[in-house]
Length: 141
Image (cartoon, rainbow, N blue to C red; front, side):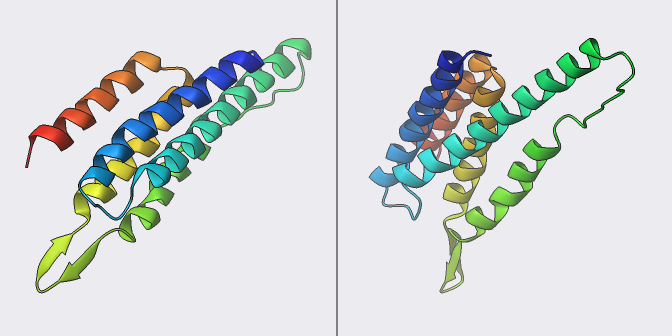
């Protein structure tokens, strides 16, 4: 993967994080544009790194027949998915028996998933997912 493709993936992660984050800011939610951009870009960085590690491992195994180097695909990405729960939990609060911030927590989790998709190079899935998240946040109350 070339440096410009890595840059394009990070830029798309910024755009997707901005789109969803601006919608959250418009509704005065606890996590806004900056938070969503940072989560999406961070997830994208992890996915790019994991993609590069996979390519490096394949190259090593092809060049040296006896290495037998193996990696477990998706382990780092899985940690992003589970770890983002802590950030999301920080946006949820209970006041007077009402729960608030749950949708923002879900949007943060989705942004992390979208960042992973962008980082892995699945642009269509990421853009379609962004559209679905935005439609859900804008239209469903």
